[in-house]
Length: 218
Length: 218
DNA sequence: CATATAATTTAGACTAACCTAAAATATCCA
DNA sequence: TGGATATTTTAGGTTAGTCTAAATTATATG
Ligand SMILES: [Mn+2]
Ligand SMILES: [Mn+2]
Ligand SMILES: [Mn+2]
Ligand SMILES: [Mn+2]
Image (cartoon, rainbow over all chains, first blue to last red):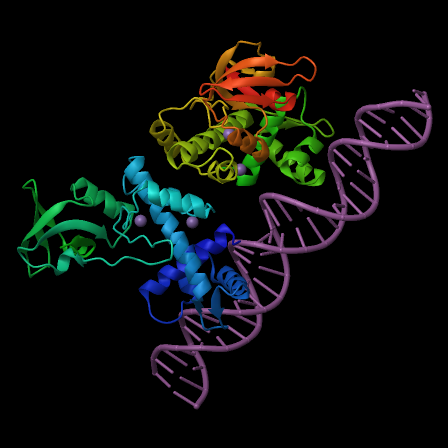
């Protein structure tokens, strides 16, 4: 078994791998794990001993198949628990991350599978992120950045790129939760800001920054 | 905040207090915590520093109000999660203890309260143990040991004294889960064994040991 | 290409939770 | 009531995960 700490490192390395090419650097891990580079070096050696990462001094790390599998299962648990909190316990999408961060370490395959079933085998979490299956497969999506849509395009809010609470709360305030039907009514070339219209006829102005962080299913 | 380990010690001390008079001894704690007396002494000093127990060398410990409150909240969480696992995820009553042992440490008051509501504010867990309220009140029950009932008495299986998997599985095999309606049809003075009859007409022979560990609501 | 700077690793230290062995104290009972 | 025995504490050590400061290696730039 792996400790909570080891699991958090594996997940962090996995997420960094999604975002960048090549090996993951010690500093990058330290950054997201909120620790110091020296601590990362220690941990990375331990993970390498356990064959969960490939590591050579000064070269950064890469997850092995084994390490990646574990990371994906933790992400699966994290996202399923987020669904539970939002769909069953009526949490808001900006309230669930920290709790899921703890729940993701509960160690019981039966529990995860039963939870998955109880939730109706959801494919995406409350932030639109895909939930890997029991065997680690992520389902594909047809999500596009709102910023890239054309005038007249219609769709539904399906996810976010920025997962910060401030961003989620901003969307909440604009009543732009997951599933909201919208159409792009105006694109301003000058500053790339957009105006969208919701199903209930509200026109909402969104800056480039915001439009770039909203994913729409079309 | 308290570590998982501290929480487990507090809960262990609380449960020992339920079972015996006077101060709780170092050895008794070591026994239930599966550690050595020397380790307990260390921890007990730390808990005393935090004002969670009263401790004097060689005198054993007693929970303070503060320590007791924490212990009760952990028990609340443990039992609510057990309800969740059994009532919502279809776990058997002999499968939930270890998972709840981990879940009980998840730290979110909102989560506990929402879970309580989601479950319909249950008063007893799947083993018939009372679930303390948000403010730490245990509800009273009218449960009696099956062994103490008289011939002709009727009631429902409402709890167990022995929480071991072997005992729970034995009851499961006899189809004597929580809520099963029974009547005491025969008491044998000689060995204190009993015969009970279920609502669907099955006559079940139970030894003194078994009858002593079944609680019946009458 | 040599050196300045940045990234990484090593060295040494800390805390939490555990251990064993030895010392101190309490309890029991002849 | 005074050992013998049992309980508890202390002393000293271990491991996981963290830290700071110093040493090492990589990289970038003039
Ligand atoms: Mn986590
Ligand atoms: Mn999410
Ligand atoms: Mn526990
Ligand atoms: Mn229980």
